[in-house]
Length: 280
Image 1 (cartoon, rainbow, N blue to C red):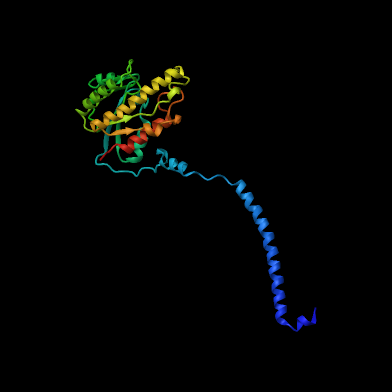
Image 2 (spheres, helix red, strand yellow):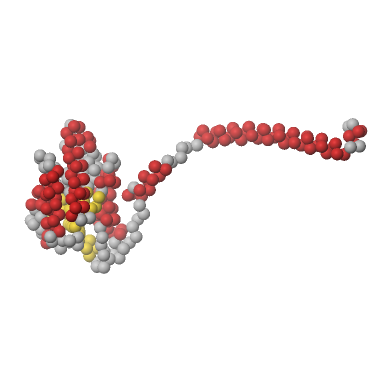
């Protein structure tokens, strides 16, 4: 070592500092290169984040809503009657509605009546309100004699008149709702699942019309479902509206016939019925 440096301790300290800074800089450069390589690998292999829009749709679907809190009602037994076409008829023994009601009202017994008949338009429904019901395995007195706590009226929208006439449909549905309300004040209008457009009626046991005819029928049904909602609003009849939850979602339609609700569809309808009706 240079003897002159030994005599100058300040110079020694300065030199040591320069050496330490140089060593730190070299080490930092090497670490930066390694970290940069790792960071690049993470970016390339990472999954894309879920968009806010996708998260919104997940939150708002009916299936993702929390299970209802059990409710104690004022009496132990309630009667609910459903009146309509095949959209009601295919509910069968209404086991899906029974399950949904039991979850919300575990201490209550429900008598459920299925007054659905397949292939009936709204005029046919109006004509049989005062008649005894005898269809398939179900035999009931006229719906006016059931003393139901609630009556749910189907729209009959899936069976347009031979000469489609939405004004006639609206006027007849108005007459039907008014007639039912003449003997029961707790009436709800059911707005059923959306039809499948050009795939309407497509399936192993479906009607399997050509796509243009299927689309035409589907549009007529859509028009009548919208009209049914307007009729109910004008009459101040509350709606059980399944339509917006099913639009564009084929899972709610039975793939066997392309028309009626699937198991998921009937479950959806049952859940929305229970969420909508008011029992005390």
